[in-house]
Length: 147
Image 1: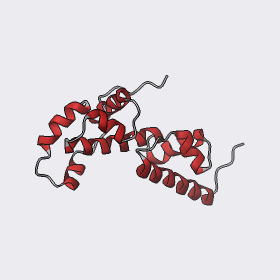
Image 2 (image 1 turned 90 degrees about the vertical axis):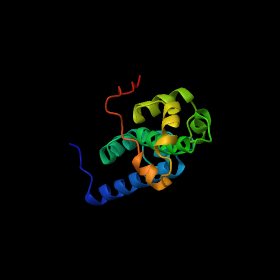
Image 3 (image 1 turned 30 degrees about the horizontal axis):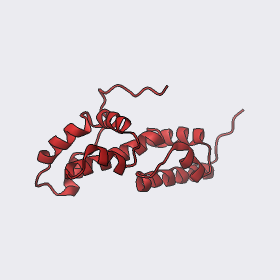
Image 4 (image 1 turned 180 degrees about the vertical axis):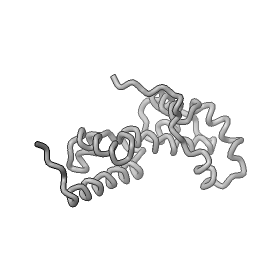
C-alpha cells in the first residue's frame, strides 16, 4: 500500500519545485545538472525529475535548455557575438549539443537564426522582440534520443 502525500506535503513539494525552477531561471548560464538541482532542493534526482515533469510538463533539463535557448536567441538577435560565443555565454559546453537543441526548439540552426533575426526584429523594442520570437518547441523535430 502506498501512501498519498498530505495536502501540506504537496504544497511543500510545489514550493520546492518552484525554487528549483527559479534557480534555473536565475542561474541558467551556470553548470547545472539534475543532480545539483536535486541536492539544492534536498530530494533525489529521480524524484525531482518526476515531480518537475508532473508540475511543469517537461523535465528539469529540458526547462534549463529552453531558458538557455531563449537567452541565446536574444544574444543572436543583437548580432555582435558569434554562435560559439553565444553557446558558451548561455552555459552550454558543447557547440554541437547547443546547435542541435537550438534547431530542435527554434526550427532553424543558430547561424541561420542570427542572419534572419537581425532583419526580422529591426526597429522593434527588445521587450517586444523577445515576446514575438519566444521559442515554441518545434513539434515536427524528432525527439532527442536519450541512450
